[in-house]
Image (cartoon, rainbow, N blue to C red):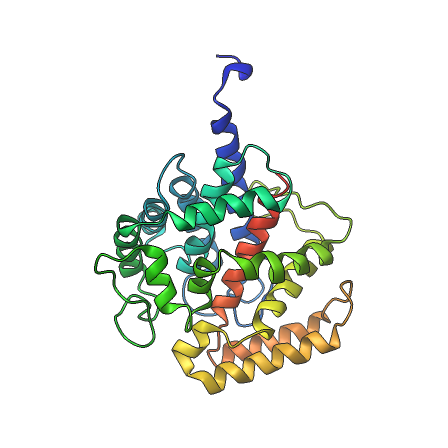
Length: 306
């Protein structure tokens, strides 16, 4: 069959899949204090495991025509089967609706079409999506997120996935994105990422080893976007693991970093950035929610440039 007769959805799916793998590669390629990176792995899954798990998850996450719940569950299952560890659940939860919205939009340039499609998809989430997503949450079990208590999501008893996310939104910033149709990501995260990139195009290129092709602008964009998320509210993962006071302490540290880097082109001093990273890891403080929101922001930027 000639390339001119191929289903255009096949090519679009491949591009969305590449964008997801690229964003997940950035997660480990760029040092984000407290988070797993090639420069400072920390404890838990290794950078290589996370990369392999994300690569396996990319297929189900971009399965053409699949529901959002099925994408989430399939991605988590595929990652576990491939590596024995789950892909980062927060990244999967954030990226599944974005991937589905990008799949349905013919014009991939400009945020308005993607944003409108995303709002429509989130409005159509049903109880089946909730059941599938909670099966995935139970597999990944990130610090009791799936438990029925004050820290986690409420288990669905016939409620839709969006309703379940709404119940957790006051406590969890990833759940909040479902509730407000990713308003924060479009209005807070994405402008910071694109401003830091400047005139350098967002180009989701992946090297042979599965890592993204990095440049200083891209590294800077990830760092500043991570700071933006972390400085605008206590990290949900830190609140669940260590309580609001320690989460607020890290939030204040991030605010201090932003004050020291007032202009979009200002980058953190590498040695100081590394010291903050090691200090957080020594205290077992991982602002994981902010890192996941940062990765999803990069994914969104890539989707707008496919």
